[in-house]
Image 1 (tube, rainbow, N blue to C red):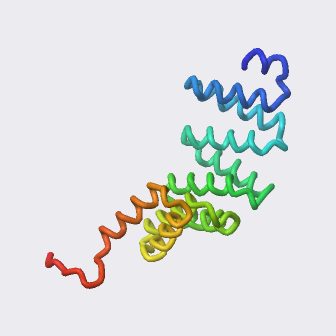
Image 2: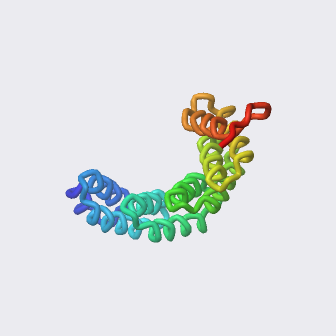
Image 3: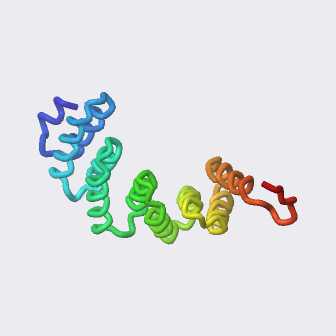
Length: 171
């Protein structure tokens, strides 16, 4: 990739491939520098900025990742992939209310997205909204019965929530 990027240093796709290769080699600082150059070389290619945001997030530069993702969403608010990635990052930061709102927007645009239903359910659970979480997790499983995360999350809620008619144990 280095030879190709020397031949066409202005080509964002080539630089992006080089950035990904550097990242896989653990050369993170160089990967960021090359990914930034790729995004600058081809600003209209959203995937290059998306990849840059992912690299930033992977190395803990969440403010930079969020800045890039917000710019992408400003350009294309209907992009569910970018919105879901932003929501994932917000979960990692413990910002569950904001993440739940982002997943809701993903679901509005892509109602068949079982992963978004599951992830929204997890956020709602973290916010203490178990009933809404159960609704989301149940919908995730309706859409994809093999989504193990949703099944595990739903089972965990059910184990932690007393069922009507079950004996109440004294503390």
